[in-house]
Image (cartoon, rainbow, N blue to C red):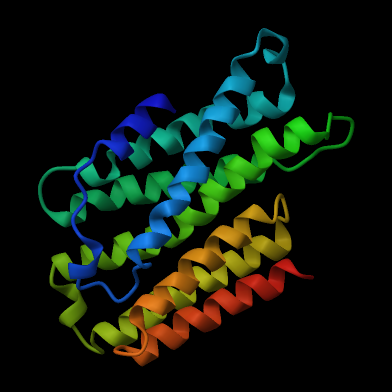
Length: 221
């Protein structure tokens, strides 16, 4: 996890305002990494306590969490053509989703404040943001490889990606309600993507706004 955090905070990211992607949150939306990194440190510290060595919740989530954070730190450092980032993107999402699903409480296990705030909230927040980041990152790769100019064009592809991300997040929120931090992170990312797109790109902006609303509504049920 330390490697993932160091890899993320030391990367020289380009200015998001110059990105051609139609599925990208506003620059200030990335401030969510502050709570995500704080949660990562809390989770790692909690896991490292000798008394937690045999904790079944931590043993279920430990390896997927470590893999997810490591891949997230390497994601933007993959050299070569943009398409080489796709395995890292897919691996990050798969590992984060696995950790999130395994964090669900099980009968007979401790389910107190420590489990909620040091395990489920951090993992849900990370998984939720990675869901949005995967949509944005995949769109960047598609544009970088020139595929976005294929029919039906960039705008329909962007709407499709937003719809897919929102649909997946809505399904996860309703079927696997591990923590409200997951839909909150997704709604934050999609909502700020709508702010960035509107009013110049109304169709992708409205799609992102509707997707954010669907995820938020699923969290209320």
